[in-house]
Image (cartoon, rainbow over all chains, first blue to last red; front, side, top):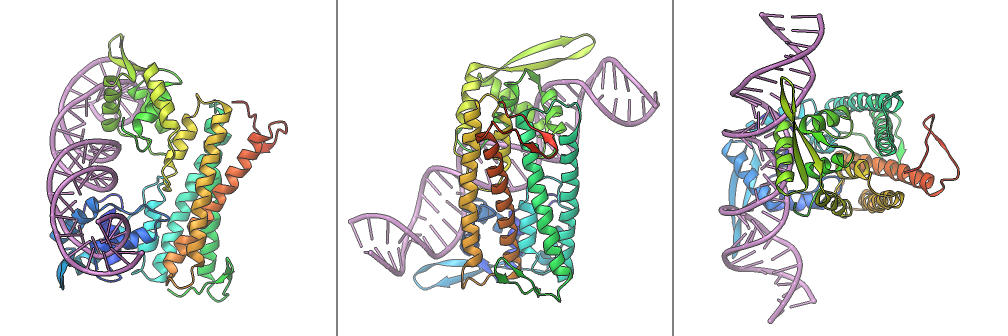
Length: 192
Length: 192
DNA sequence: TCTCCCATGTAATATGTTACATGATTGT
DNA sequence: ACAATCATGTAACATATTACATGGGAGA
């Protein structure tokens, strides 16, 4: 597990901290939340599980079923939990993939409330830097910005601003837990 | 050039419609706009140029310089322009990569104003579908949504809403060209 | 001198997809 | 009878990264 981007194997590790699952279970779960990331193919899922098993980060448990092909249920090991914690503490790469942030957000289940807040704050500072860079480019004097590039910059700025707003809003809710607010018509309890 | 995702080779083709460039030029340019996409490595850039050259989509022109290593300047061919046009008309994959949309937005230089508008509208309908799916999930009755997933959903919704707002705003400006609006303190002429 | 920019390229590696292969069970 | 879902896996391919190799010119 080299240092670098958060990838499928980390995602698997995170899911296995909830409960042991088979490859098919994982696929089904990820497909069920097919909103923010595309679920991986079996061609990457099964090899990933094998690799994790070989590295001792998960253990494989073959569960035979009557008249059915036996399932292979994987559980995370202590080494696996450690590897996951390590990856969750990585500084996210400064690109705009979002994916990494989302995955870490969903996987941050083993972290305490403070870890979640830190994660949001880290993202906030990154997006702030990003927005500042965009703002500087769009205000640059010479620089021959044509319409298409201006459009792309404007787009990037709008999304960055929206993300900052969401992060600020969410952080406020977490930092002031006494006032239970209503968000989107749904009361949201904030216990972690 | 198989059918599928917009990739580095398409990006190169798009840049070469502006003017002939060397690999180093392309790298430098992409690095200079390191806001919305990370610039490719030389390890992918040069092979991509070779592949394009072999397929006849670009032509290579070796320009010798005094006392310096000669540069290889690439120009797009008619076949290359055709391939680019084809890829720009692909329906974007329904994932959230954004990258594809941004690239196409920047590269849509050879398309007339109508093409740009169509591109924005296509994106709009996709994001609308995406947002509807998110909204449905967040309002689902049972479904045991825990805090982390709820947070991720809320995040996705906020970004989708912001993108829709930007798209609507931008489309309005394009569809009503008579009223020159001021955006971000900068007057934006809309001629394409 | 030393470092940075110019300028091209290859090799090893990582990571993923699509398509294929297999086969049982459940619902229509 | 047929399709969908369960369940695992492999092989070929696509695409990209990092690290390495090479070498000249410009400026501190």
